[in-house]
Each structure stands twice: as C-alpha cells, then as structure tokens.
Length: 215
Image (cartoon, rainbow, N blue to C red; front, side):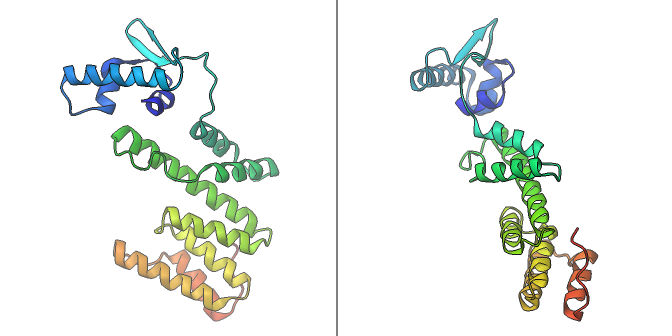
C-alpha cells in the first residue's frame, strides 16, 4: 500500500485502491483489507502518512521522504543528453537501479511500472555505453552493453555494442562469438535472423575492414 500511494500521488478513492491491490475480493473484504492495511501503514511509518479528505486518500504532502524510483526517473530524464551533466546523471541513475521494481509483486499496476522502469534503464545503459565507447573506454562500455543484455537479451543494440567494443579492442574472436550468441538467441526465442545492421557489423569484423561507426 505504501508503494502504491507513493507511486500514485494523485487523490484516490478507497475503491480505486481496493481494485488495484485486491481486485478479486468482495467489497466487504476489500474494505476490511483497506482499513487494516492503512492502520498497519500508519503504525509502521507515522500516524499522518495518509491524508483523507472528501472521500479521497493520498500521501501527506507535508511528509518528508526519499523514493528511489522517483529519483531514478528524474535522473533518467536528465541523462538524455550527451554532455557531461547528462553523463553524471546517467551514472547516478545506474547506481540507483539494483533490481526490477517490486520484483515479487504480480499486481497489474506494479507490472506496468516495472516494465516502464526497465525500458528507461535499458535506454540509459545503451546511452552511457555508447558515450564511453566513443571515448575509447572499451572495457567499461562493454560491461554496460552486457548489463543491457541482462535487461533485454533480444535487443541487438546491446549485442552490436559488445561486438564493436571487442573488435575495436582487437578481439575479433570475441566479437564473432557475440554475434553467434545473438543469432542463437534470436533464432531460438523469436525465430528471426539478426538485422541487416548487425550482420553488416559482423561482416566488417570478419573481413578485417574498418569497423563502422557505432550507432
């Protein structure tokens, strides 16, 4: 309940909260769960954590708190550029994100937020990896590309990033191995072949020609 309210800062009716947290219970059971959980929430945090006005509930706007999810999203927004301030924001965001949002919670509202945060995390990882790769910080960049693949193993940008870093680091064998891994995952899981862009990078690597500019 605490995470639900702090994620939804707008005013919410009791029924809205019940529908989100306990969608399969009767109205009477939902009312009981709402009030008992709100009581425990107030005991665990502080008495005035929830404000109830005109039939609606919300987090007390006067309470002081730090919510890492909101901080992550703020930093992710700041990290969309390519200057040093954006780079610093991405580094801070990457340090904050340690695991998926409420990983064990299967409620619909939680799943949607988790998916959105994972997409933002993937975007930040790829931006920061590219930023480092273009500055020839190849081991650091490769580490972030591999971390991106841990978020989404189907995203070919991560595979191309690893291939590019290894090729630039004179590890053609490692780059080709990554291409084969990319192809295996796509064929096995999605029944598709690597994209034209990924294959073009692979062919440049095996031919020994100049590696294309990282995109």
